[in-house]
Image (tube, rainbow, N blue to C red):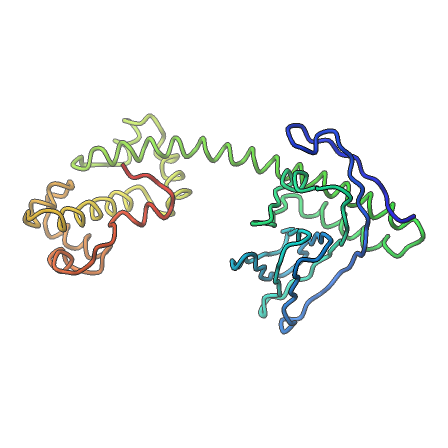
Length: 299
């Protein structure tokens, strides 16, 4: 038995209603050593699905390096170039399934979360997926029906990956909803720089609990609301120092800080220099760059 046909149907893709025949080529398990040489794969004609059981390693795709850890799966697409190797201090162990596909299955794997540019996903149900990959290893050399058995395992694994990615999409939607709330808090703070903020006051104005506000700032900025307010004020002051001739005391009040000495301490905390040193420096970078790097519009 050379191959076992697997039918799938994904609504809204070019694959909708079509069947694809997978041919299993090889299934393997490897416990890598830290000193293992790099595996380089240059445009091979088949696909290779890996599941990291333990440890970690590096996957290089189009010049970019990604750290992959226990509970992640990665797919090496046919006709693409890859380099991958274990972390020398925490080398990975993985199971892989090599296979060919009779038709173009990129839509199918895209629905699983894999793309040629980012061919890896995090698996939520580690135990079940690990068990399925382990079963694929065990049945591969069992008897003449190994193609059917491994193909069956692969089909179930793909169904789990589809479900995994759907859950991820739901999670992304939840994160987007939280970001909308976070953005409303940010807009209130940024639009009122001279206010004497407190967590209770912000909570009352935006109708979001203080505990929720703290959680949102931790998730999206990795800092407390009060730390954000201080840093945002300093960033605004940096822009005013470069664009105006106003005195430092005036700029401090413009950004909502009456105590000039406190302003000086806060400014040095976030910039590493005094306001005068900053004004006289050759620094031209955007003082709000730290927010833009996080993909956050600060206006």
